[in-house]
Length: 157
Image (cartoon, rainbow, N blue to C red; front, side, top):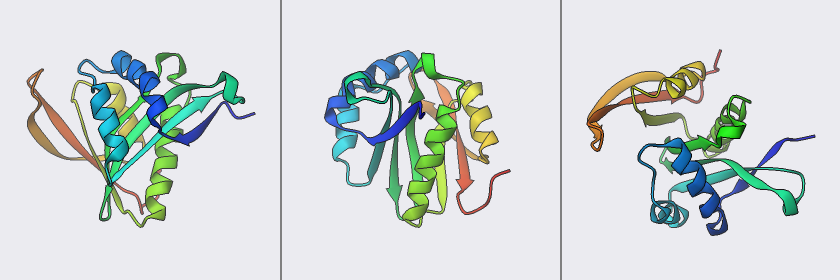
């Protein structure tokens, strides 16, 4: 029995996404930011829902990214606290990478706070490498961003 399944994000999902966002990030995106992503022409947005019935499903994770030319730029990924450490983020990233590969995307890039050790550990486990730094990227905290990149066409360990 599948614990979760992937679905395209809709406007009806934004309230649940926003709740996960608020628990997951010190500086969460606004509802308006998520709504803007739903109409962005390069955006791809998925939610992960738990449950086997549409009557009893809840959003337990989401991912937002852009596909531009041959690159996937990961903007947001989060898992609700109750569902963390169960392989859901790895599964969601894998599904997203597969979707990008179908569109002939070859690389994935993202920015991450150096203080976000769990995320960095996950990304390195998935084959990302540090390729740069963006000074003062998180201006509210005066924190730089690490730029991580992954070649989707290379096999991960």
